Image 1 (tube, each protein chain N blue to C red):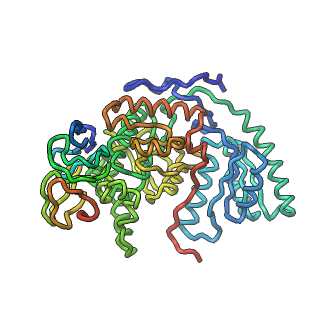
Image 2 (cartoon, each protein chain N blue to C red):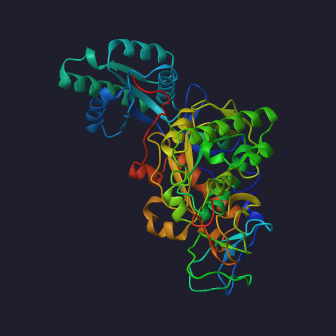
Image 3 (cartoon, helix red, strand yellow):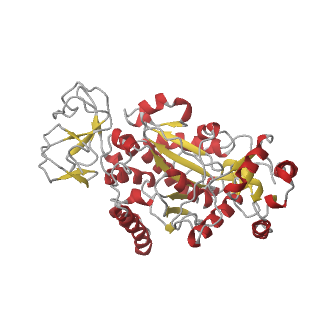
Length: 91
Length: 404
């Protein structure tokens, strides 16, 4: 449950932390908003703020949003890989 | 009373700070508890006497007024809870002497009975027994001078980590709360509990979604069932009032900081129990029966939950921040812990412990724990926390019944 086993990814791409290997969202941990690649190589939309989440895979409308390997909500519309995941597309 | 410790000795890491070692320097009360402050408290037991209390402490530097929306005319459970909480605050280990201000003679008699064997300097005054506002103030001043003299007879003496009961709280949660402040606090609380101390977590609604964690961590199925019943009741209340919960919890600040749902927020908040088992479930303001980690059933806004944990005897609060939150309690020093670099820069004068190194990996969790331990030892021994310096915090007691 605790996140401390998870590794914070840092490098050329944006620093981010995926709480559990099974999660489909990752938390961005820097403010380099212009960069469109994650430190581990995946895509990320421009402009996602520090502490906000990006989708690690395409998520269909109605599918679970997983963080900490726990269902924190459901997609209220189709979400693309790298897209910002927040109250506009997750409930 | 033995000699005063020159310097507190903070714990150095795992296995240190056992029950016999001095961790801080505190006031040993007759009931066996140890205070980290020696407040001269002026408790206004009802809002009608708040002005009297405010004026009385104006020309007494050491006195702390505790004034709230405490009411006559409360009914049933609310009346009993208000009486219970105020009595527990009057006799809190951080209180060295107390002046209790009542409105009428009848309630003053009840308070005098309650405090007759309390083991510390206490005076009860009835407003309606005074002669004019000037006379009432003069009487309060005389009482404060006398209480202050007796309060000062208490001296600090070495005390072990096991003497501490900590309130654990979070506010302004963001993504860093789950990776910095809460896990750092969790690691320190593991050491506190191993040394024989106690800690209280609260805010029942913030466990909505973390039910599996409760089942996994509760020391027995009985404790798990009690906590789960509290969570289910909170969940039902939020559904019943017809108001959309989103925008209330997670709050607007939480959402701006990136937290989307209550379950996501709950999962971060629960990091502050580290790898510990939950040893018991407490009613609002109930005192823990001993060593261990306890869950207390409280509303989720921090002034109410902090009041409940203060009444339960917590001497210090560890408060995890993401974005800033000016919470505290008038008689329980609050230590603000934060891992968000932006918040730390903007609110540099209001936060005690920076754990932002956990984000860029320039700090380990054990180093975070040591920073928290050192701050707890120094604040417990008398140095002011930032929340104390700014005088943050208030006492608010929850109410469940409509007023007549």
